[in-house]
Image (cartoon, rainbow, N blue to C red; front, side):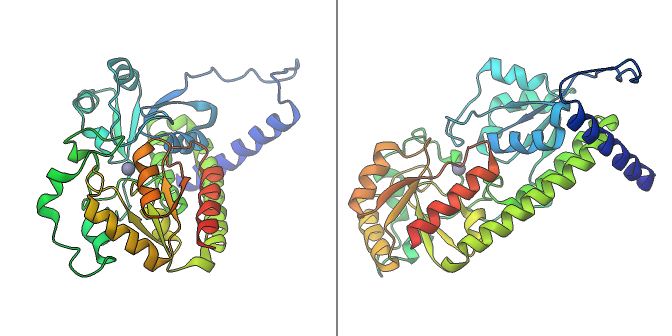
Length: 333
Ligand SMILES: [Zn+2]
């Protein structure tokens, strides 16, 4: 059964390639077989744009992707409107990441819907633990630890986070940013491909072909990023929001996060940060376009670092992760 499906996959894949390269526009000649009845694309919802990239790579023209959090929005605080939630309800599949947005009341309706099958993008992934403030303080001088008791009272909320919204950014819990490492994306590709084929068995052969292609693409990307960052193994980068842990783990780096539990550091912690940055030779603070803003700018000034933007929400994964590697490498030169 499996081998029959695989050989069918090869022949279907080849015929698609030939048709596509010879007759890209929809041109037909009298001898052509009638095209198969066009099924409506499979509607698949995802939480963040890089997952949309992955689903499209796997589903091609056979899928229509609904992205819950657009590229301009914070992946930590976004709450979909009723209209956006209804768009998700019209999907056959939802690929979740474990972000806190998936704990909102709107998601209960998705979970209750008999029409939407929820696929866990975390399947098969050993999640790392999100950085905690104590890890930051490990880098600081003696005596800088043990201030957690006052943390909730003397910290202003970080931009991109609601006041008192500690669940938004579950520090110390499993790191949800699983879409920022090529190796983890490869694991998610297998999970999503399986779900697409289960939902639409008629697409299984095409999806299997596309899965092999995207696996090769992600392997090549991983090799390239590994080579680019190898000279900086063991170095630390300073980030405003701890989105890059899977990326830094994969390439032998360490991320130190400024923001803790959605809150900015106290004056005392800023002093610790200044000392940490000096001790580790850190001259760059990486921020996200959606989280940080002016607060990040003034913190960077306080610790004598330059602000550089890394975007965890960019849809085009290979282009974005290459750019991320480039900016990190430049900052560590
Ligand atoms: Zn995040």
